[in-house]
Length: 114
Length: 113
Image (cartoon, rainbow over all chains, first blue to last red; front, side):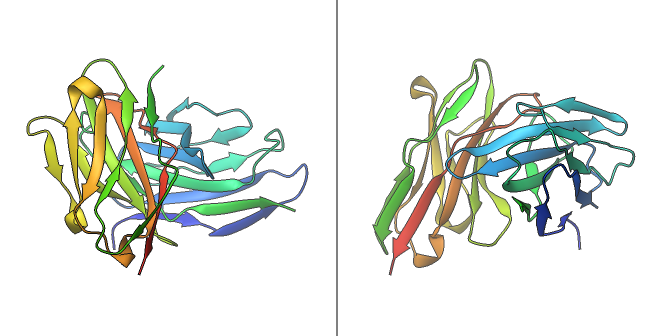
């Protein structure tokens, strides 16, 4: 079954704690993305990666970090520096044609602060 | 700065009513335009897309959108909505060949049976 798998579905973070959100894809896509969704604000780009071992900051990268050691995987770490982490996090990957930039999304992880 | 605007934050319609959701973008150059839909509890999924050619594009579930370059608009339409169309709808845009996709703030659509 091809697609993008995000885990966990729900995650709770304590003060001062780093948490990592998982994103795996089996679509053989090179590019992957992380977005944050807040009510009334749409989706905002956190980080993206066009190829293994390379990634770029998006519009709201502060307080987040990523890695891209494998083509299939693009984990996002929400660090203790992110003061307002409560949100819905969406991972996406892009189809093979950069010119068209069609992105496919996972089911999301909802992060809350305890 | 590149941006996408959706001015309708919450739209409530009765079944069988016609729908039009507004989307305006501020992009220079060649632009790719998208509508995504997020049904309750489901993945964000692509509804339709415009790259070039016929400015009237048709998507899944009877939706269509019209690209009007002079108005920088890409409004979503459906002639007769159903209760199952209740969802959040996002307009998005990117420049041709650019990695970054910019989303609007979304429109929540509620259909009353």
